[in-house]
Picture 1 (cartoon, rainbow, N blue to C red):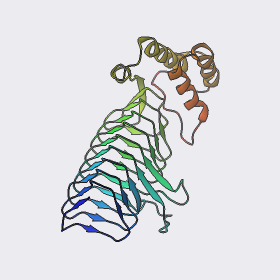
Picture 2 (tube, rainbow, N blue to C red; picture 1 turned 120 degrees about the horizontal axis):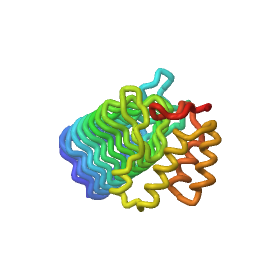
Picture 3 (cartoon, rainbow, N blue to C red; picture 1 turned 120 degrees about the vertical axis):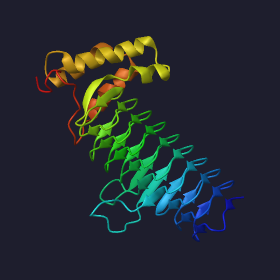
Picture 4 (cartoon, one colour; picture 1 turned 90 degrees about the horizontal axis):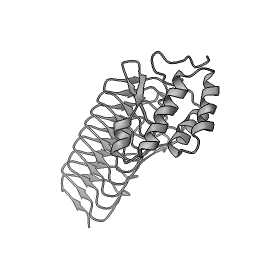
Amino acid sequence: MAAIDPTARVADGAVIGAGVTIGPYCVIGPHVVIGEGCQLLSHVNVTGHTTIGARTLIHPFASLGSAPQSVAYRGEPTRLAIGEDCIIREGVTMNVGTASGSGVTVVGKRGFFMTCAHVGHDCHVGDNVVFANAATLGGHTVIGDHVVLGGFAATHQFTRVGAHAMISGLTGVRGDVIPFGVAIGAEARLEGINVNGMKRRGFSRATIHNVRRAYRMLFFDEGTFAERRERVATELGDDESVVQIVAFLREGSRRPLCHPRGGAPEAA
């Protein structure tokens, strides 16, 4: 059975899983589904068409499933889906999607969202991410698995950050960041490959070498960017991590690609 503090307000229609703890002064809306074993410590607001995965821990003053911060939103029944085993710290905000976007904001499993982090409408966030204090996503951002965002980092709408990338604190991301990349600066520039992160996650020395080589070929070799990309695909296409980078680049985006300072021009 769920343990619900008498000061909490749980609307009729909300679905509360087995073993859920809802602490003092929490407010749960009628279209909310909370998975088994979740803990809402106190003063948590969950509204909208929101689903929270099992065993997620939510700290005070988090607000999940509120309306998107979009002038086009007209109260459509869009959704927020949060995966299992997340840790959501104080003051975190996550909005539902918009009818003009994908209609749903998706947050993956095992994410760690520190104080005052924000996930905007229609964002798609992968598994095992870390958002440091006040890290902020503009609407429609796509964040890959194992991405780390430093404190007060922020993404422009429609940007993509590839899997295993790291965004430094106080970085403004206006363009797409390749998988395994490290971006830094008020106007983000690539600073290399997230080698330390790859080592921590058990990537082989050969794979790390191939990803670093792919980075040099992409951004510092001669030829147009398309030619460099296809050279990487041909020469290093046996490495799954390099294939991931090439696929990210081929997919394309509404935003420009984040480049390193001093690299070859994109249309060389």
